[in-house]
Image (cartoon, rainbow, N blue to C red; front, side, top):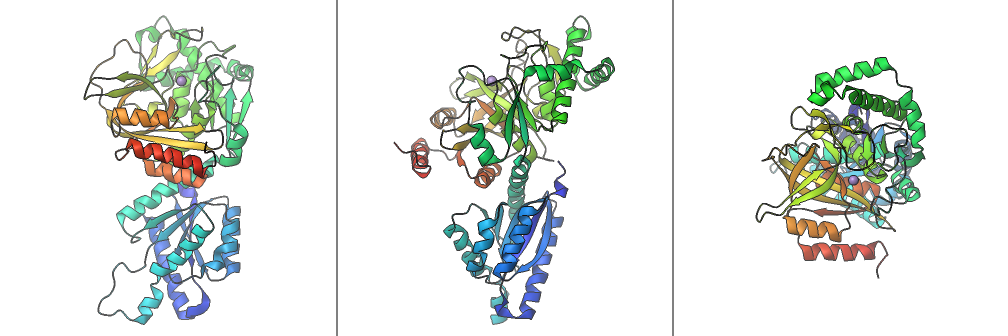
Length: 496
Ligand code: MN
C-alpha cells in the first residue's frame, strides 16, 4: 500500500462570533499546523488542510465530503477557538470516517509578558476542545483523543499510530477474503459469524472449492516455475534434499505458489484461509507459498481461520514501512523452567518470513498429518525484542480483540530436529499471569505476532471498529482483568 496516497483531513472548527480578522488568523494557523503534520516524517499518510468550518452547514458538508472521498481514511479535528458544538451534531451523525480529536494549542507557551485578551480569545483550545469533546461523548461516538503541543515528538508518534489504524480500517472496507475449504472439523475458536463480521468490519469472507484453486495451479507454465525456482535459489539456503533428489517437490511448491498468487490476484483477494483437511488435488499442503504470500502483504489463517487471516492483513497494513514483521502464529509448546518460563511459537509450516532473523533455509520434511506429499517450507529463527500477540475472537454477541505484550527471546539452542520457523517469547507481565488471563479472556491458539506494532495501534483499531479490546501487559493484575471481563459482559449486554 502506498500510504502517501492516503489522506487524513485536518478540520478546524470555529464560529463567526470573532470577526474576519480572527478567522483569518485561525485559518493561517491551521494551515501551518496541517502543513507541519503533512511534512513530519513521523506521520506516514498525507495530512490535508481543509478550510475552517464555522456553521452547521459547513460542518455537515465537510463530513459528507469525507464520507465520499476515496482517499480520506479519517479526520483530525481541532478547535482553535470556541466552536459551539450543537453545530456539530448533524455532521457527526452522518460521519463514517474515524475521528482523531487533536487537543492542542497553536502557541506552546503562554507569552507571559505580552498576553492580553486578544491572545486569550484566539488561543481557546483549552475550552473550545472541551465543548467539542462533550458533544462526541454525549453522542457516544468513538474517537481518539491526543493531547499535547502539535510539534511534540510524542504527539506526532501518537498521531501516526492512529493514522495506521485508520489506514488498516480503510483497507478492510470492501476487502475480500477467500476460504479454501471449511473450518477444521470440530474446532471452536476459529469459527465465527461471517455475516456479523461483514456488518462490523466491512470485509467479506467467501468460499471457493479447493478444486477451483487446483485448476489455476494446474495451468501454471513450466517456464514460470523455472523462474520462481531460480528466485528461491537466490533468496534462500536450499537444503541438500531440495538441490538433489527432491527437486521435483520444490517445483511443485513453486507451482502452488504461482497458482495461489494468480487466484488471489484474479479474485482481488487480500487474504485467504486453507485447511490440511481439504487439499484434494494439491500435492502438498501449501507451506512455502503461504510464507511468501504473507510476506507480500496477504492475510493468512490456517485450518479455515478467516478471522486471523483478516487480522494478519490488517496488521500488515498498519505496519507498512516499519522495520520488522507480522505473521500468523500459534502458541505451540511451553518451557516451564522456573524463572525462565517461555512459549515456543510456530505452526506446522505457515510463519511469515517477514519476522525471520537472517536468511531462511528452504527445506523439505515429512508432515505428520494431512496425508499429502512432504511439504517445502522456510525454516528460521526470530530475533529477540518487544513483540505482541493479537487474537480476534467471536463471543457470540460481539467480537473481542485480545492482545498480549511479550518479550521475544534470542534463541539459545539450535533445535536441529525441529524443521519449522519458530519464535520464543516471554509473555508479560509473567507466564502465569499472562496465560491465565489469556485463557480467561478466551484468546485463541492462533494469533498474529507483531514485532513492530504496539497495543496502542490495536487499541485504536478496536476503537475505530467499535469492538471490545483487552490487553494483557506489564500492568496486568488478574483480579482487575477478571473484573474487566465481568464488566464488559454488562457493557455488551450478555450478563448472566
Ligand atoms: Mn493451527
